Amino acid sequence: MNRRTRILLPLALAGSLALAACGGNDTGQEPADSDKLRVATSTTVYADLVQQIGGDTIEVSPVIDSPAQDPHSYEATSRDKLSLSKAQLVVANGGGYDAFMDVLAQDLELPDSAVINAVDTSPVAHEDEGEHEGHERAESEHEGHNRAEAEHEGHDHEDGHTGEAEGADAHAGHDHAAYNEHIWYDLESMRLLTDEIATRLGTLRPVDAESYKNNAAALNDELRGLESRVAALQGPLESTAFAMTEPVPFHLLEDAGMTDATPEGLSESIEGGGEISPQALNEMEKLFSNDAIDVLAYNTQTESPQTERVRALAEAAQVPVIDFTETLPANTTYVSWMDTNIRALEALTS
Ligand SMILES: [Zn+2]
Image 1 (cartoon, rainbow, N blue to C red):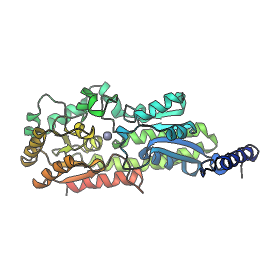
Image 2 (cartoon, rainbow, N blue to C red; image 1 turned 180 degrees about the horizontal axis):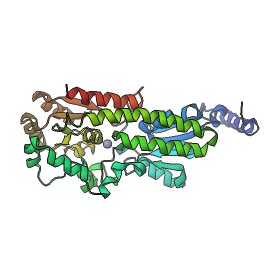
Image 3 (cartoon, protein in one colour; image 1 turned 180 degrees about the vertical axis):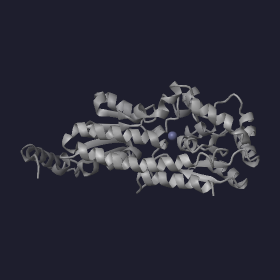
């Protein structure tokens, strides 16, 4: 046992005195937990990745731990601030997605060394700085969907973020990145993040650095397995056009070779809680019945009468609907969640 009894005992004593004094039942200060590295993450997605790498040497608390909470509109509470103040490492998506984390980090004056932003190691968060090569190729290769593309000439659908880039107001005044910020739907980004998490945890706790590295390697093997299944879909799904009720699963669908044919602004306005115009609904109906959209990616997590109408239009036209969620469903891991998502795409090819 390597208990730092000398340091922990007075702390424990102080803790129980404080409890007795205020009659609270907060058990967050137990000595056993003080031995663990504390990590705070913005969502359950990042909490799971950190947990897989840190195992039982860490204690992870996601700020948003309920699938019913929408990270886009979330505002941090004083409890969240307390949680971040106790954390030795903070993991956020970044890129304006979980802006409440930036606010907290700023308030607490956390040094950069205590924060990981997933966008920093993500290739999709930086590809807009380059040539858009992959996107242009996708556009010219999908000749089977001329109709959908012709109707949207001049709009850049391939990024799936047009509305966010041009009109941050669609997302309730948050600063938005010039790329689709739902980067956890890009497996490569999560694989690179995994390495970064292992490195940073190892710096904080050198005695476990080796095991963090091993855990990250095991996780990365699984992620590579998922990536190759996605890559294998690029041929079979290359002439498949999708529409999204929200731009959440964009990176996965793009990596599977599919083309984004979502009418301009539609997914962004749904995600921003806005109304879908009757014109946009008419357009959806036309695209579904003209076979210009082969599959609807549907976010079940923020279902509304509006999104249900879009779903009903797809079903009426016998267009397959795939359910996605923005954050990790309860009682699952990132890997098994993505496995389920990829299975749904694989089912399109059979
Ligand atoms: Zn979102």
